[in-house]
Image (cartoon, rainbow, N blue to C red; front, side, top):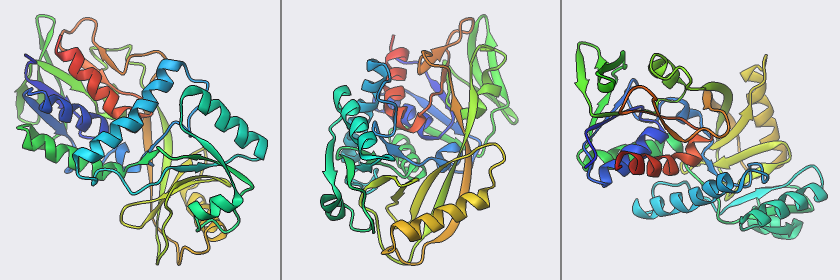
Amino acid sequence: MIPHTVIIGAGIVGASIAHRLSKAGAKVTLIDAAEAPGMGVSAASFGWITTAAGDPDLPDHVYGQRLRAIEDYAALDRDFGGRLCAPCRGALVWGASDDETSDWADRHARKGSLVRLIGATEISCFEPMIARPPALAAHFPMERAVDVSHACVMLVRATQENGTDIILGQKVLGLETAAGRVTGVRLSGRVLAAGRVIVAAGARSADIVAEFMPDHGITTSPSALVTLSVGSGILSHVVDGGGIEIRSRANGDLVAACSVDKGSETADLARDVVEKVREMFPGIENPRLDKIEVGLRPVQADGRPLVSTAADVEGLHLAVAHPGVILAPEIGRQAVELLAR
């Protein structure tokens, strides 16, 4: 029997853990400082469930986790009647040269990804919005996309239907311990008793666990999500090539993932994205900036477990990983296994 578990953080990781635990019959309380789920770094996440964008030279077990993530999201989407994932027919990826594209596809295929090289004519059939398709692209047909904040809301709603208590708009002020184990979570004006606590608050997790897990190893890496509203036109795939990483959301908006370098101006990023969209996808009418969101992605050192346990505080766990969106179902699975021991 899993004891009452308090999960701190209602982003995609916390929501995924709560969903799996509640389905397993555990008593769960989910807490977030925001007024709605998925409002932290999840809101600034591109939401590409992918192996294609990652390094094909990752260790086999790590690459395998990302392959399973595609299957996990497909299963979740079926469970939610096709409403969890964004419409997406896979990904089209190309590099600076045909040789680079071919090598990228071949290395991913050897790792187990389903991928096929296609020429310009077929690219135009698959994605007619591309005005000047490259001579060669890699098509990853199984890849998924998810509008992350929307997915968080759906997971939390389902978790609540399973009996989970949801506390939103409450900042966690600290953790309570006694006799070497965690006993509760301190909120404004009260302490919430808990048998287990899982801290899944992204970059904010570092402050919450610092006293008890000083070796948490959490650092941050900024990323930007540019959202464009459009008059008409939609991309059927995630497109990663020609200097842009972009897809359509379920509501028709375009979202583009952008790296943020030191000294980057968000206005410059937005302008570059709009210009690139007009150049590459002229059939998309009137693309215009809606917003830019910059999120601090939590990053941990390679080799750290997705769900770790405090050495000196029984019942205290940390669930932080990058890429968190891709690995969220795996983190949820590992949390259930850990807490069921």
